[in-house]
Image (cartoon, rainbow, N blue to C red; front, side):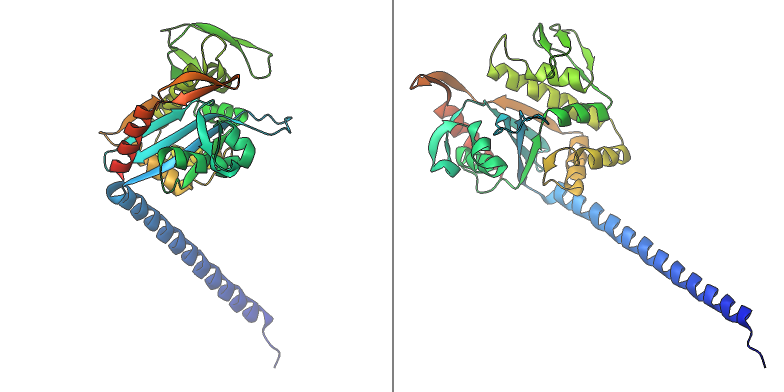
Length: 297
């Protein structure tokens, strides 16, 4: 009696259909477990976490620049889950500090990045603030700032000073009027933050904080799905070890009704050592900020 090939083929199709269905169900189950796990992780950190830190570095690198890079923007973001607060602490680029990767010799903090990259800058910040560990970092360059602001759909910002400044590529000039709110795209926002020819690095640091604050305000208005999509794009544009889950945790923190954002720039004074300009950090300010950071842990 001849075999029935059609029946065998039918059973094989049926068997493969069951296998594919089983694989699909397993896939759905895994995705569900990951989602539930992420939800409980975020919830636990928000309600039981204490404090964590992110070292933020803004470099002056350009795609065509192969020289040693320096970090022109140096901030410590202190994230306090208990008090629903983020504190942005900025150190001017010329701050005179001990740099661990250069035998603890004193130099401008901006040079720490050139000496040993982000690891050296993080160690330097840990030494300045006497912290055991700064677990996370984010390195942002010119292009990534432009892309992040554009991905947000632009930001709204009110300039604190009237001035004009050329774009990074020197091809366009942007003018800003004190007190007049502007809708800024990425290049406009970057040009605003970088300006320092009419004042000083202290004010440039403050303008950088203004741009970051405006970006945070804009992100807060987005729903979590758009924030997730934005996060996956942004984290691919900057150098960071912040995970997408941690980024979503910070987003949920910002969404709290009692959330607050504080900004401060290190107190200090101008000085010259060997004819070179430095910014001497104020001892009283350092003592106070260290006490606040340690009490928050």
